[in-house]
Length: 412
Image (cartoon, rainbow, N blue to C red; front, side, top):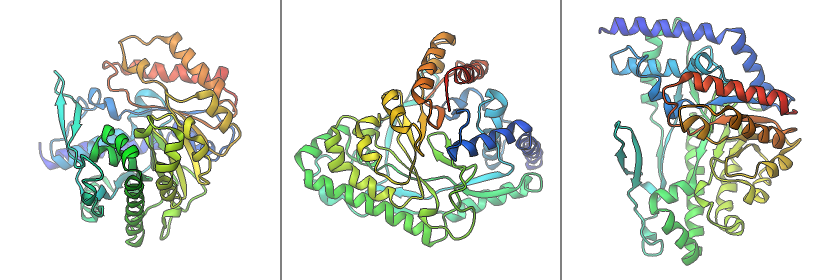
């Protein structure tokens, strides 16, 4: 297939995205996200992340053959497939975003791993190659972190998209929320068991390690700021965890500082330590990083309720993950009427296990959430589904069930 044939395919998809972006449905859902993120009474936003099961949908759709064209084709589909296939609240921009990001190597190390494939060739299992075996003996290995930004790479992507379909669908350089996961960095470098032993055996060295990570992340963000690499995060941009940035509270143009953008933090790796140890060893690092963001979204799969006494002190916290392992009712009590979104991550089992959608079980699961989160600003973000058994209709029905339950049981 020639480059011109690839160009024809991309231009068709660009026109399709633009048409969907201008649809009444999409415009209504943009307004829903804006109302939700402004903490105005509204229906919950509902989103099913396609990333972890897109291998069951995208490959059969792709027609381009050139490497750059195929990558752009994937991104175009990712921009609008959710609205077309699942009818959830993931909205479609009226431009093609070229999402830029920098790179960060904790203490100067590239995180490496060995992966294992299943019978279908999907690489699911993996193990990391650890650098630190004993924090005390290996402390000298904690060299300064390395970080940077490859502007030329994103310029090439932007130029390619502009040449192929920019006259149909505007091309725009974008940035998602700033991202920091210090305890994940630690576990990737030394393993969960070694991290837990180090907390008990070498407390002062552990504190210093976390302090250094905080300083390195802040230095990295400062470089992005100084070099003019920070872009607005006030609209369609992602804030992590399947959520969107829409806000009137952050600038949409101009020279930006870190305080002008969204940021994200989580600490899934510390679920096995006490709230007191989290407060002593982990939270100072997280508080320091969080302080540089304009708005903060916190949490992934970890239950946040045990450490809520710390988290609630963060003045810029605007979204908090309520995972399947979290006390839904407790978080509802804490967030009711607050200017912090209740970002519910439902169990992935309903979509990811079995071929049949157990509708009454789904309803009961979401009735509990609706009761717990009434009076809160609620978003329902389904993540971590690795197969839908090639059944798109199952996902669409799942979204319908959620909407029905919320209409019956949720009170804004």
